[in-house]
Image (cartoon, rainbow, N blue to C red):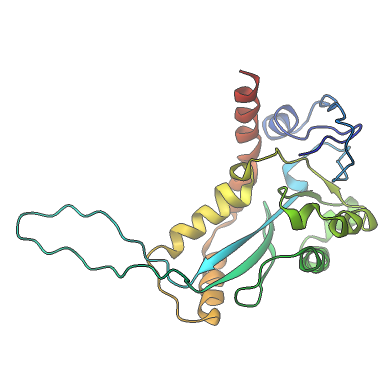
Length: 240
């Protein structure tokens, strides 16, 4: 990610101290790289209770995978059809916090996320957040954590964040596995959909809704609270 003049790196010490003691130390300033800013960095303590995170994912209609099988002599292997080169898929966008899912939607079949779609989804999420978590919206405002995908860092997205005065948490560059939606939410979703063959977009939506409704509150809390541990490990590795 590009450097931001005067920005505080909201990972490692800050997030780790928030979870362990409820307080966060002031993080060091990140040196400016001289490039233009792509985020509105947060000047507040990155408390997990304030974090709203999001991401997008392609969901395949056919989630069956060919597996290696251990067979005894003479035993016939279990048949599994070869995956099609152009498997049907639909993209879902999801916004969530440690309190649960705030908003999700499905794009048209085969449609990918764009800056226009992302900004529209963002405004919808804020409307729903005001209903589901009014205390957060009335007392302060959420801290947005999203990765560096092009729709998230496009000029239109940046202007929308500035217009709505939303603060963001800096995400480590080239680290999709450090986003809670990737390492926690979508990983569990993949396990839930494993070996399922879905016949339509409506069936995909039903399967996703069932997944969301089947997760307990601890699932979402753990996903956010694991964030400082993962980022702290990353910072230790980067220092070696």
